[in-house]
Length: 132
Ligand code: HEM
Image (tube, rainbow, N blue to C red):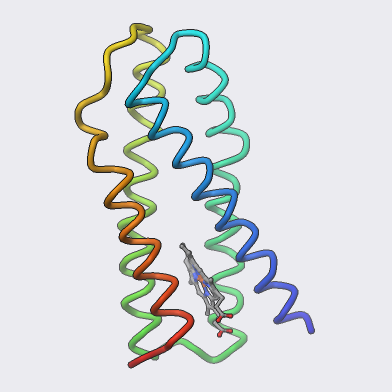
């Protein structure tokens, strides 16, 4: 029961985290000085805490479910580390863009949405199929 509840919190936190990342990435592609401070505040107050919750509850269910050592989990954690790094990059560029202002698209974030989407697909398929 506690395990299932922790998994529910894990999935909810992941949803909020990924939604926040999408909004932040879209804002960097089409920046508006009006929106940037709000999106940056949302990232700091909501998206980043959601990422931390996803990690905390993910590790909790991994330990309590006895999943550590399974190959699918090792690969999943590697992919989640890359996703977290991508989020770190967005957070940094969002802070910089908010400080600078301006409406020029952030070219370096062009690959964030397709790469992030690919990572999420791979992570979800891995954890649901546990194919290896
Ligand atoms: C932050 C590090 C993460 C760890 C340590 C972790 C670990 C786990 C573990 C051990 C389970 C339980 C598997 C089961 O009971 O069958 C799980 C479930 C799940 N995780 Fe994660 N996870 C992490 C991040 C993520 C991310 C980033 C996503 C999506 C992008 C994700 C999506 C899911 C989904 C959809 C489930 C439910 C699978 C099912 O019940 O079939 N997780 N996670």
